Length: 420
Image (cartoon, rainbow, N blue to C red; front, side):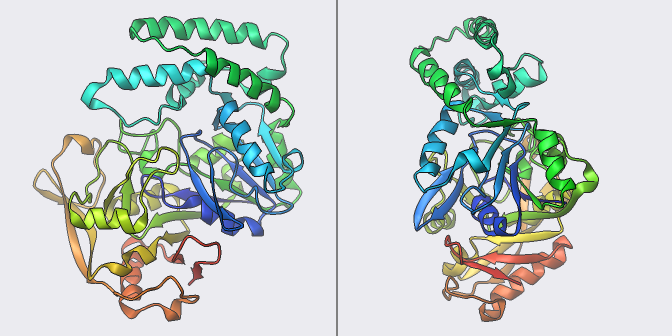
């Protein structure tokens, strides 16, 4: 049995804390896609920890954690993370496993990412410049190197061959980057990576399922950044939706049970691309300030706006969401009036659907207003303790989506989650 936790917006929904919260009820936590462009923030022993590639269940005792084949892995970032995690007394030799089919991010992938983004001028995607897209391009182009290749005596030869190919591409961009220091770090990290548990991921995970173990599949980014269903081309390079669990871990569709979708009580986006409910005013600035909306990976200020139910309903549909977790509900405590986007006006016509190329259309978000609750909610432990106006806000969202908000996160702490 596999349950899934994934983001329903443009990423940054607070999935790290949610995975950490649910992980206690599972035997295995597995990351199924994305790369070090993800930043999952946890608070361990009151210390802030940001995980980029290691599954967020790593701090739960006696849990197995798998980095699946759908991930693109940066050995340097992984080594850095492992050093941090080990500092909390976690034995990674016992609880961290890496699928041998997982593709590697090379130093030249980072250079290519930078070159490609610079070449776009004012049409930039908003890449984190971590080498994610070039690594996935090599994967689909059948050129990539994988974790299992590290154990082959010809790995260095294969690495040099791919680096030469990348250099030709960089020459086409007329872009030069001294990667000497990057390469030194890379090969040092590779030696570290070879000492970890490299496994045949699909057999590993299916053996766990066959043995009756409970698996939690952890997604990165958000549904609206999916390579197929997101706001293309302003998307990530992997399938961030439920379907990506099957190809990213090697599990069959019928093994998936609950799909737990995570959404903020409002909306944010990092980088470029369409954002119909964006507030480029004092209200947006206040959301950013109160919510501390700055990227966990990049530190970039997030664009902020009201919750978008058109996009959220779309995400629930394509993911088959069975339960919703609403995060950062306490951020809305300060607002006297709240807005909820219920429709788009697309080129003059009302719609509740996400169009093919929303970036090419004139989009106006149409709202329903709600009174704010204007009282602190971060100390509440039960749904009954929450103000009536907050319950009305949640009830409307439940009715619109046809999926219930089952949990409300009302603060960053591990214990600040209310079960409804």
